[in-house]
Amino acid sequence: SAHALRAADRAGYSDPYCELCVINAGTDKPLPVQKSKVCKSTLNPVWQQDFSFSVGEIQRAVLKLIVKDWDRWSKHDHLGHASVSVADMLKGDWTGETPLDDTHTHNCT
Image (cartoon, rainbow, N blue to C red):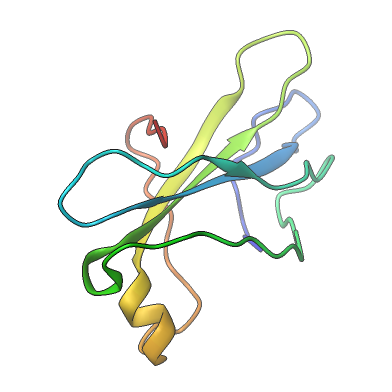
């Protein structure tokens, strides 16, 4: 889920979705990108989806999250991105909240 996203549409909402990928240690090459469903007309999306990744070296792997606004006729707008250590998630050191950085566009690839 996310909350208080930037409104990217004229109606004052966004149609957010999330791209997820894992960057394995020792390479900058991400594993295949997975995408959440689009949540229409909201600034507080709740995706409630499960994703699975095959991770190489867990201690140095990073889960990258890119939140975008879906648009039918134009380029999808970047709403923010974040990175989370896979090791921290697995050992319980991650609280489940990470602020999105919206200062520049990021991609999984």
